[in-house]
Length: 105
Image (cartoon, rainbow, N blue to C red):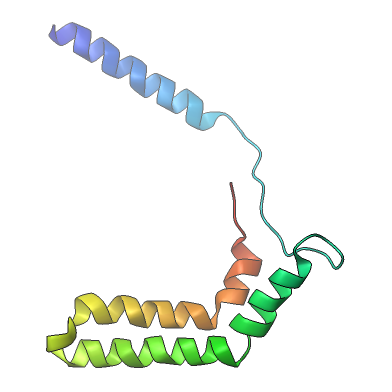
């Protein structure tokens, strides 16, 4: 039984290594060009909301509430506050993150 398990484990490792070595195409989502479908929705969501005053206020709110949660242990402490601080920082740079990383699927 032990040899059978070792043989199966060796085959699983070999199959995993083979499948991970196979090159596949990666598709990255980019901003739609003007005139494309959903261009106006993308422009409104990214340019008007995230880069505009709404995104700025949301980001500051996350940072402020995260700081209060870290300082005030009754509202969750660092377990709640640190992710809120991280999300607040990410929202301020979300347009750059979207443009640089894209959505690879």
